[in-house]
Length: 217
Image (cartoon, rainbow, N blue to C red):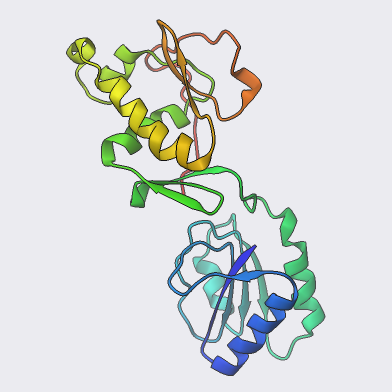
């Protein structure tokens, strides 16, 4: 698990970092948003994180009101026992959302994350992948993609869909070492992030069908 410490007191910040390092956590590099635990002390601003799942707030409990409900928060007031701090951090392995090897979409940045890797997409690529991501294991035809993503079903005579699928495979499948987007000969494509449906007969989705609600960070 990676962490960031932000503190008004630099000496206190070094003490917290040493304690977290002893516990086996890794400090995220300066300016990085790739961390899941934030430890904040004093009147300070919380740094932006790609996948924050937990926070320790020391003498700045009011910051808890700004955090989403999904974040697990520990509020401490000085002085406090280090055992209380250690017990909270040690239990974070079971925090929902701390799993590293999952596909995560970042709409504001038009990027997709997997583990420690981030892949930047164009607006059209992100829109196309988001459409697949919301409909896992459902075969989607080229004509539906043209009508929905390109807003022009008349482009069915071109290979624009196939070209963009190749773009996504290069930026996601190849970079992450996964097989995400699979071909269905004569039917279209399917997003299958694991092998459980790789060889299954999956019906072609119709427009307005199989809409899945997803949470985008």
